[in-house]
Length: 146
Image 1 (cartoon, rainbow, N blue to C red):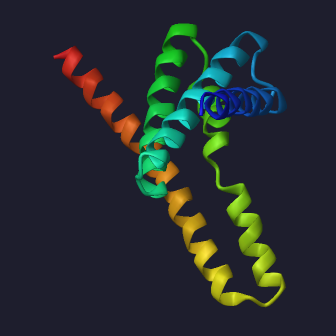
Image 2 (image 1 turned 120 degrees about the vertical axis):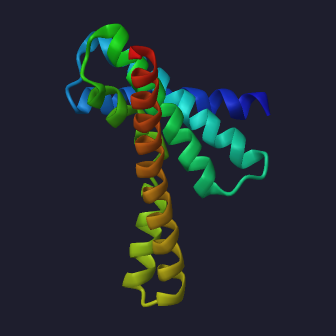
């Protein structure tokens, strides 16, 4: 079990930091990008292993990625989009989208529609999680300024 978790941590860090490199993130922020992606993925992985459905797990992991991205953006005075884009990459359901398209191509529409629905729910979950973290951030800022 420990080896699986360590493997998940390392691969999610590499995926997030690698997308930071692809998107020309500043070199000094690549470690933070990798850490944010790693923490978001490990929360998702842990919640799914505990029996939670993948959609709420994705929402909660996206909220964590959004909150950590806001913290890093303020600490390192870097645009938040750098941390969000690379941090959310491990949560993107690319494999499921590929499987859905593959089933459409081989005329297995029943499975393709099921997988497409799952992809849409996960994508929406990512968007909702990022939006919730932004709303919570704005509420905290308003409460502090009062």
